[in-house]
Length: 385
Ligand SMILES: *Cc1c(COP(=O)(O)O)cnc(C)c1O
Image 1 (cartoon, rainbow, N blue to C red):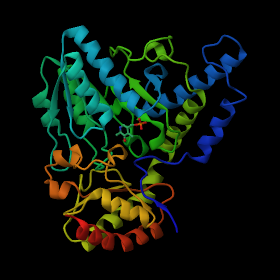
Image 2 (image 1 turned 90 degrees about the vertical axis):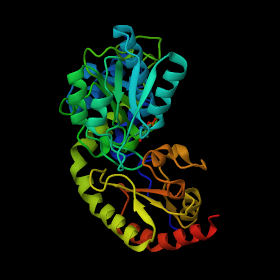
Image 3 (image 1 turned 90 degrees about the horizontal axis):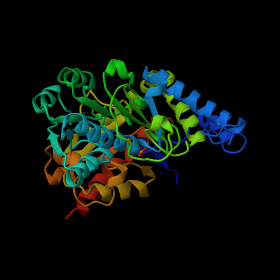
Image 4 (image 1 turned 45 degrees about the vertical axis):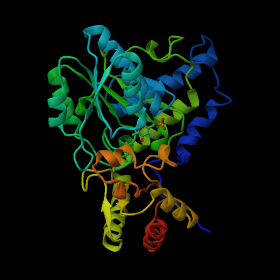
């Protein structure tokens, strides 16, 4: 039976062009970038080249890019590092974020509250899962250490007004972190146009390898490292750099940057057709997230009276790989925090489905999917207690 992958927000395959530039750094050019000799210099040059490439896409200095092991680590470093530094600097103890964030942000904020004496202000989202500038403005106070609002939501695709939020944070002198792990594949990530102080990226969401990420740290932003040891990454992230993955990360980000519009233009009509057909053909179905301010490859729904995990299993058996939201949440019997934060009753929030398109998606895939889904929703409903 054919298998159709519709879960590109969970991860993407590595682009062949990315793999090609990575391979020499496993065996031939295998040196440690911190070594003095030729092998070390070769590896260091590759890492610094990659750093220049990433800085070029973000419109910042190469010395503002910290390579990490993944998007989650970038989020952790941003939140922990900035919270600790801002408390030391000005006694600030409040972290402002929302329940729409990826767990890499929200669980980190919770831990800072539980074990490290910080307080979290959970910013309200509107019915589309958006954090509006007004909400941020009203929540900011003299004791705010940092604000963390994601650029685009992984579960519901909503794009937040980061530029406007950044302008408010800047006016009040409070740091702004944004998790751009989903956004970087399809949206501009120029940090000066956005106005953010910290921005997280992860390689495997834009056809790069898993296990590598980056954090942009605006010059002058105080940050306490969470991983201590050697002086790599400007003293902000100890550990020998993962040279092949860093090289692959930079290539993948560069390709996403130059092909961004073409990729979005190819997927948006497929996605719009999918959303229209699902809402038209399936009763008691709603789109989650923003109808227009959303990632171009992203569709997400809730179906009343459906167990989302059961629907995923039925879809999988029929050859379709989808998600109920975040890949990290499968198996949970409760609606995700995002569904609850949207104000959806349990009866709706349990029945979430996310379909995200990418490089391998074709019109025939969407037609197949649309042909199959209505029956599976009916089946899931009949099995729902
Ligand atoms: C995938 C994802 C992360 C985590 O990135 P990893 O590289 O998988 O650790 C963080 N934030 C968002 C929005 C994501 O989609």
